[in-house]
Amino acid sequence: SEFFQWMLFPKPIEQFLNDHMDTRPLVIKRDVPNYYRGWCTMEDFEKVFANESLRYRYDVDVTMFKDGRTCFVNPHNRSISATKVWEFFYRDGATVRLNRPQQWLRAMWKM
Image (tube, rainbow, N blue to C red; front, top):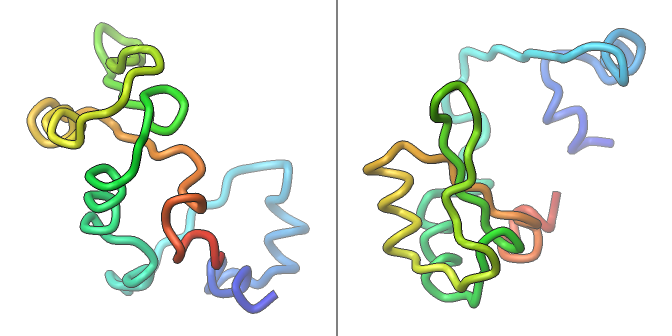
């Protein structure tokens, strides 16, 4: 598909399928800093976190790497606070994962 080829560029689909699919990781390096621009922005995430009814662990995971292991820092099934999520991210360096991004972001759904 055209989209799949765009994601893999400059690696041809056939080469990916033969050399990497289900066998080894693929790292693609490009000298095109804005290659993925337009798919999803921080503003898009900010809008989702501020305007949607999201719950920790079900819709959003917040994790940090401490003492050699990954730790969840989100309470079970509580509604998220957008302010708190961004504090974890910006202040504490946490990873914020939006589960099922295609449900919340149209650009992801179109992929």
